[in-house]
Image (cartoon, rainbow, N blue to C red; front, side, top):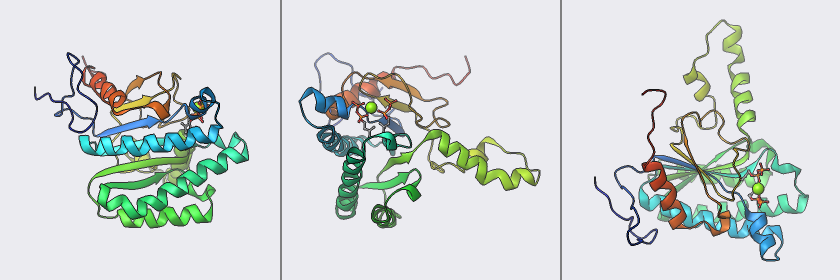
Length: 249
Ligand code: IPE
Ligand code: IPE
Ligand code: MG
């Protein structure tokens, strides 16, 4: 087995198992949770937690790129997160805007292409325009694809697929799993092998409900702003030690 510590990433720990670079998941998904609690612990406003969480995303995306992960999908704002105070929602949207502006300049150099998954009609015209620009610049780009789930809900995604297929159903066509997959935001993207949730919560909160059918789950107590390359490395090593049976024996 070709085992090595990922260069430039998580520090090698003496005696600790190391990453098998021949078995890196193609697609890793993360529920970026715990920003608010991180800020509260420090006596800071929740918005400071979101800013710190955005920094962590930048760091982890670069690490995934170095490891050769093809798709990194992160849950940044759910269809239910609109329930939060307008000030907090506004701050999250501003961080998204800043990130997209930055991505437009840096994306090609960093080799991380951006795609947004979710109902972008619910976002401001300014952000929609930035998304359009970012995705246009991403066309034909190699490297790691970062899927940012914004105004994303797994149920909403499935309901949209059903509606998109309704005409075909009316015409007597039989719906297949492939047809459903092709009508999700993740069309063309393989299902995530590994889903990570930091912050100690043990639930999916409406994330990738269809795509997670055979994903491996990894939960970590660390709050997202404190999530490090080492935490990521541990999650991948845990994944590499699982036996995936897909219903077989
Ligand atoms: C995750 O952190 C970010 C979003 C959901 C937008 P939270 O804001 O949910 O942080 P906690 O869970 O309250 O600590
Ligand atoms: C899930 O976190 C959504 C994101 C991380 C964007 P939440 O904090 O919204 O989830 P719940 O409310 O704890 O289930
Ligand atoms: Mg939360």
